[in-house]
Length: 426
Image (cartoon, rainbow, N blue to C red; front, side, top):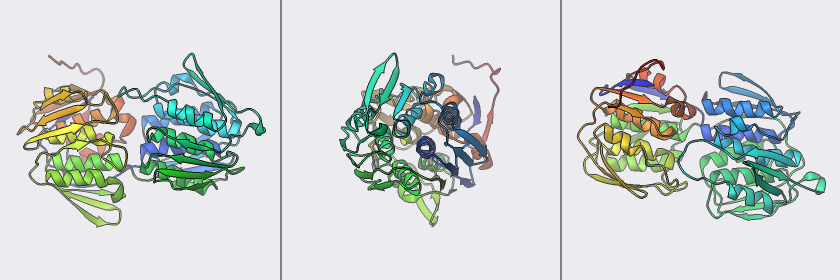
């Protein structure tokens, strides 16, 4: 758990880590390559460790030194991903596409992860079936197999009912080694999808249109080794921008890709902050008086659901009434109750949160409900008067590399407490 003494001014610059959601998909994508791959700018996170364990269980050799990961996928010894790891990490389902493309067979348990909504895998499955795979789901296991044609999938046109990032990435990876052309329509446009496509292209894949709603993939016989650097994490960068705003502190962030942050920057400017580019990959936030605004989460290039909780914490102390509408995940407003424990005035009805700004929050013991909620509570603790204790750090450590250490370097009064600390929530 974290102990935070709030209302400390922050100052300085923070280095943004590699993108978690890119790294997880790209690690799975390395299964497509029967040679060595090297990934750079890999964040040190619990989810990354789990994905590494899945690759190892499949027979892949991995060696990590700092933020560099060496992956040797010459010998994949099994096509079944282990349940005990997959059940903890939703992104581990990504291995089904590369395994099916490379081996013609894959067995992957239905995934786990944060309890923020249904997030079914039916779009992934329908896409693979359209490419010729026989897919069955029984006893919690998704089994996929390609019969005939030397075990190769066949290119086809796939229309996604919803622009799912996971389904887009699964189908795109599977299509890289398929026979013929594959077109994905209504594809997800997130920067992480484009990053995965760039990784596959550098291995020799033929992919066009990634980052738009239509992606074309021409299947190739084989991919080759690559040395690839993962993009900076736009959600971590957005989180530190909110940290500057909520503590009324000037902070500098690098490296960032500003266009990836456009929706968050636009809302911060509406709230009253100024965001200044200090170079091609560096931003500074200059805070000001905070005022209310409305937010609706949408697929990229809309406002990211992964920033909704952090902005709820910020709007809780912004003057006026704000409405947050969550359209991506149905269970992703649960952190409002914990923010209210700290003195926020938030009401939730359906997928809408009505936030009435208060002048100040008060430190309290709070419990994280999911990954981004855990960070929202840390941000609220930074702004609150007195001491806040945040429990549920296993959520936080899944998605933020050394968040408390980075905040301490900026001047926050924050420390980890061991599990023997007794917390009262009365």
